[in-house]
Length: 195
Image (cartoon, rainbow, N blue to C red; front, side):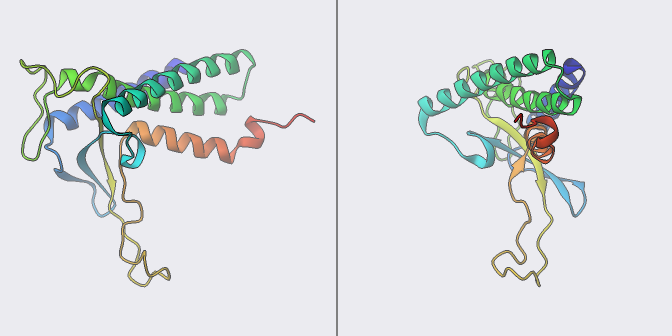
């Protein structure tokens, strides 16, 4: 059951990222769902919402943390399968795992297999001079951007006319976020309190 979720989510995430990385220049935009969602290629050096730990040590620490977290998630899923956990929980955990692995692939190997993307410059695949970064120091490819804005009459003046959700994200981020929200909404069913 886990592999039926993990492999397709991971494959689709990576196919989209490779397509974006090799077909878009940094900052390039394309309407996906007009007025709602666009594709906009950016590379994220850190983690969600562009947060980053400074320097090479910070990048290696972040990638190391991602690897440890992915192993822990895999072990936890294995344990929960043996305990016959609800399928909804197992699916949710697998989506989180797939998302984590998808972003690990970017940060671990993209720096070696792609040349640098730039404004007006497509990334070269397997560049002869080597990639844009050493192993485990690559950037995560992000591309989905909601362009919906709060209406001008919105009662919170600071939000009026601004984007509802400005971060640019990828399928791996969505798999993690939606699954965590789903588990929170179903926590009583998935994590019953034993008295």
